[in-house]
Image (tube, rainbow, N blue to C red; front, side):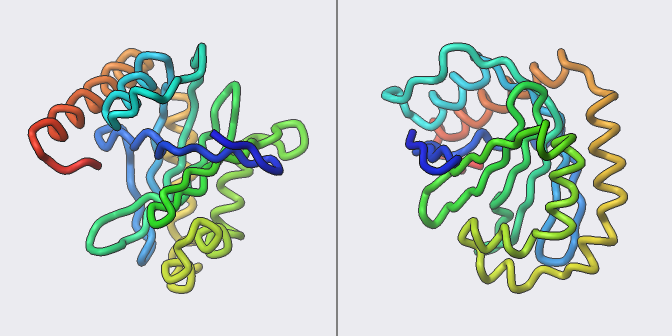
Length: 195
């Protein structure tokens, strides 16, 4: 982990979304996933173990939750996550994810200065998506973003995000996150693909 000018750089990639808990909305070459996430010590440890990063030490105590907005783009025939807005209760932040550079850069959101992290994130998607994708290293994708298509799906994304914020089952979400991590570990051990 490295910290520079308000950006925390990690040498591990972010925990992937739980597909069963993620609602996706297509907008041309990008899609936006809406997921309610729980993040705790057990889920983090399972992710670190799955990536075979025994030398990595997870933070002492992790206990946060909230809506995540995942921005995916089509690259080499598969969906790749380039941006993530974690509108968490305790530590809201967003990620620039560069798979080419193998970097995961996290930037904190100040709810006092920037207001509700979810509203802030939705507005960034509406007004700054191409610029943020370019910053994440997806210049080609950024150039092909159809701003009108993104604008057209944003009411549905917003509705799904607020529904996830206020109508979720923590027990189901937690069990799904752990099961998803275990399934990925099994697939990886059996020589299957990592998501």
